[in-house]
Structures are given as structure tokens and as C-alpha cells.
Length: 215
Image 1 (cartoon, rainbow, N blue to C red):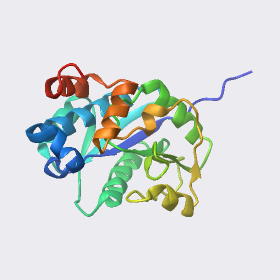
Image 2 (cartoon, rainbow, N blue to C red; image 1 turned 90 degrees about the vertical axis):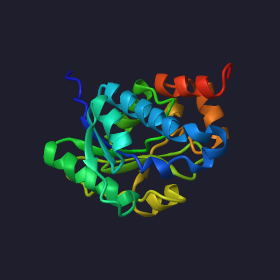
Image 3 (cartoon, rainbow, N blue to C red; image 1 turned 45 degrees about the vertical axis):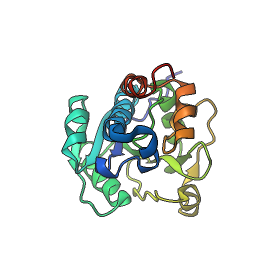
């Protein structure tokens, strides 16, 4: 019996202007907040690019301090029109469709420093079964991933209680076990401690070791 071919994915990762990034971690990271934000995004992008079903990663940003390092990792960098997160995601998705109209398109949050390529692959394989789907964050309030199959309108609803917004918009909630690293975004010190417990990527781990030796 022939094995069903996996759908390939274009993943859009939004990276806000770094001066506005990780404000809830400002007290913990101090003057290293920008370095920390770049490190977290670098681990997210690196892991996504290493995922076997990801064909490309498109970073949407208006900040050269992020565009340079993330482009060097292999991401395709698109300028952020600076009209909000969901507009940025739609701009990245439109670019993805122009590049590869036959691939699925997903939006992935940029703050997943413990992201594992194998766990992302599990989530994406599950998402490929539905025209429109999403993965809630670890708190079951927000969203870390939203995706659509080829030809399905891309209508992300990130921001605030986005889990409820995506459900209301008709997206299928993915209830996939064993993908903790895909759900663990980092906005607060408690989030960071949870990500450390999962195991940080090398970029974030280096900054954490510098800020908190022995952690």
C-alpha cells in the first residue's frame, strides 16, 4: 500500500520590532532584552527550518536587527507593513502562496525557544487533515500555530484570547499529545522557566547562561 504523501508547509513567523519585544521580561533580561528576543526567534526559526515537512520559513519583520540574523539562518525575510500582527501574517502568507501555491501555509509564533522539529512535524501532520486548524498555547488561552491547507483562505485571529477567536472563526482545534514544545511560548519569567525545563535551543540557552549562570 502506498504511503500518503505529507503536505509541505510554508511557515510564516512574525517578529515585532525588537524595542517592543518581550516587555514582560524586561525586568528579568534588563539591557539584554533585545539579544534575548533575537535568540528566541533564532531558535524558533532554526527548529522550523529543520522540520522535515517545512519547505520554507518566511519571517515578517520591520527590524533590521532581527532580519539580518534570521535571514542568515535561511529564512525568507518579508517587510512588515506595520498594521498589526494579523496583517503582517497575511502579508507573509501572500508571499508564501506566490512562491509555492501548492503548499499549506501556517503562522507560527516567534517565541518558542524550546521548539523541537519532530514535535512540530507531528502538529503539522495533524493540521494537514483539516482545511483550517490551530494549536492552543500551554495555557489554553492563546494560539501558537494557525494553518490552512492549499487553497483555503488564510484568516489568522491572533491577539488576546485567540484560542476562542480561532474557534469562533471555524478553525479546528488540534488536540495532539506530545507537542509541548510547540505550545510553550515565552512571555513571562514563569514561561521561561517552563521552557528551560523542556530544554532550550542553543541560541536562547547561550543568552540564559550569560544572564543567569548556573540556571
